Image (tube, rainbow, N blue to C red; front, side, top):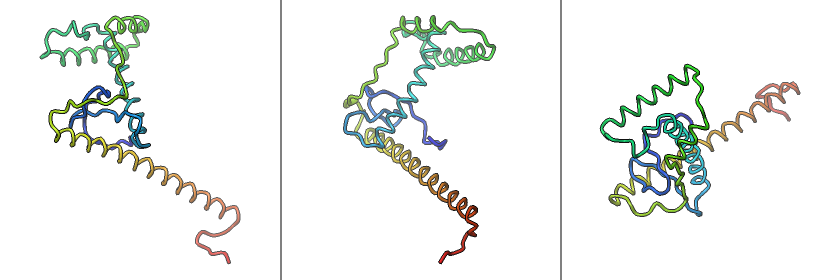
Length: 178
């Protein structure tokens, strides 16, 4: 949002439960303005992440479910592919975008975002309540930052305008007109 570290969470769509370590959108039709704003930013970020994974899966075909043979090594494989992918980008080696898209479709990439409720999947009520509070806190913080930034910008604009008017009219700052 503004560079403030809010914690580290995995991001899921509305089909997942909200958990202390998993952030999901609010969804539904009765969201507040702040919740809709959170969901929009959340969705935009998830889209970027999904495109990144789509490119990696298209480039390195080993990330389809049927190709993951050893779950203990999959993290190392993933890091190796990311490093190789960045080397290719840095070297300016052209990538066939059409081939990447075709491979993504072959792997069955589908966006399963929906705005429906996540269901009752939480392990226990305490985890669910903690996760809800954390998401509410992120939403309130973002709302506060947006309002604070708007107020600061408005205040700065008014001060600049007052200084401009005082220069144009020759009125000294702090002088009172009678």
